[in-house]
Image (tube, rainbow, N blue to C red; front, top):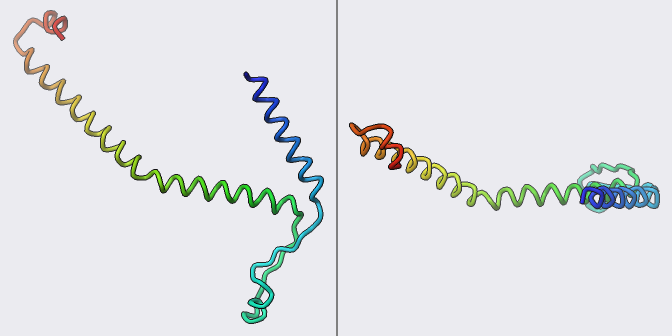
Length: 114
């Protein structure tokens, strides 16, 4: 199984290298469309290789998706935290009640009975 994982990672790495080699031509990225930039009087341009733009878009999409899911799952995490606190409180209460029920009894018999 480990070798399959390494083979899969090698294929992905090879595909990324081939993507980078095939898309080395520079592209110009601008912050604003030309008409809006003329109206505002400001525009930022940057030339980057196309593969950086592609990979940056993939990484940016992954990060946005991870953050979105983290916010979406907030309710489940809060509910799990509340249930864990309730479970711990009930476990402490059970231990307290066992101690009261076995008070004054022989310790060995109390342990066997529990």
